[in-house]
Image (tube, rainbow, N blue to C red; front, top):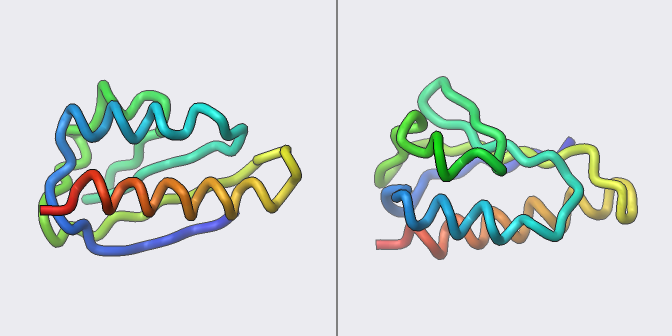
Length: 92
């Protein structure tokens, strides 16, 4: 499992949640986004994003695990891609 924790540069919106979920379509890793004592698996983020309550400065944790193409390396690649995309989508 790979984990990255950071402060969100801005708010997560319905549109950014949809784009974030879509950007992970090519990965077999299980990706989870957590904030404010709630965690959501990335495929359902477009329906549950409001439960996370992510605004500017919110501590966000993204995890990636179980990737198989190739094992271990895919998790690192997925985590790097998703955290970068998250930051870009929520930048104010």
